[in-house]
Length: 57
Image (cartoon, rainbow, N blue to C red; front, side, top):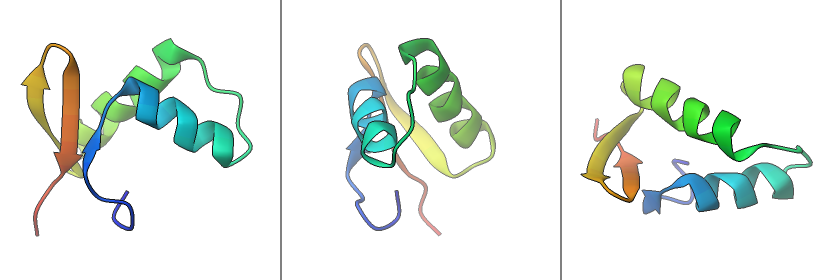
């Protein structure tokens, strides 16, 4: 995420995980994004549709 930057949503997360050889489900991808946000790595910038960006610092 640091390398690619920009905004992250479920679709982008799904594509990235698939490109890395995983078989993600949409529900799990949303959970991963929420977990990364709760750890302070992402910041939610939009509620609907939900979008995140990389946390600064």
